[in-house]
Length: 433
Image (cartoon, rainbow, N blue to C red; front, side, top):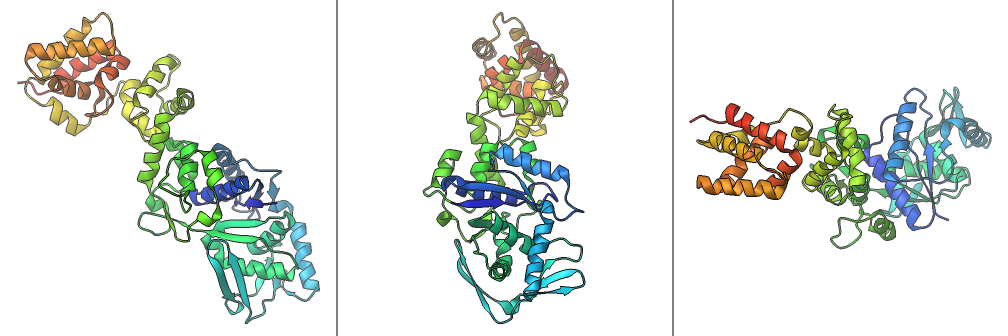
């Protein structure tokens, strides 16, 4: 049976690279009808924190990466590591250096890795120093604990980043010394920034939690991360999790680094947001509004739903939604200076906005059709193009020069807010000619 594992260290929040590693393991297990295990490598007592562990597990659940069986904690297996190391010591394969137990590497041997992605990799043991198994503080080293755990938990495939290739020959030596059958290894390409250097904070957010806070949907994250180094074939980009599971195979994982393109990530999220249900988006928007202090008990969820439906096809993230709709939820309109200059600082605009406010105030039925009729009839009376009234109205009410249909915006904004903002713009923002 295929058994894979994801083994995070709770010394920091979940990095997008680690999330991609977890995803590839999970996808491989689900495609092969195997098992996906979660092992916590928490032997660094100083840096390991419960808050990091909670965040990692919460992030995996958020992505839908459910694991099989119970969690395994390395910190609870210290006696197993020590006894295993002492066995090598008693056999003469290891030696003591103070309290540390060290495996003696025989120089001049060629270790061969049959990597499922990179093919055959050969390493001479002249390049490998003697390997510490148990450190002087009693804690196992990474390579030794990995070998003991992966063997005991019957891990069939170790799928991890390219940066671990240098660890693999060291681990193969230990598998041989312990007379254990090694798993198959697959080293996936690292995630790179757009400048093709290793992904770091200078390229933007690197922790998965930051993208979650920005309002990227879990479906987007899974879809985007799956395509970083793996291809389903063809030009397909938007795939459901079921489709990805069905198609996922290590033979389609590339050897070269995968570029983390934030623009493409945001575009993909916009596609998911556009097609998301109101039931999916409402709690996300509510949480974002509460975080900003824009949500009150008097806010009508039905009306909030109308705002969501109006804008969900035009935003890239929930954070972007809040930015574009601030004027709906607060008395503050974040005016775009260029839009004000281009649309409001023109001769006669103040008068047109005042007349439009007067006309709208008299509308009996407040809906987009009635608002549009009032706009176009006023433009005809003033002998101007409807656009010469529509554009300044949009800026006056929303602060922006682009957005959804103006008449639907005004319908959702409501008569009182619309009229008030038209009058404010006419008296305070327009050039008086």
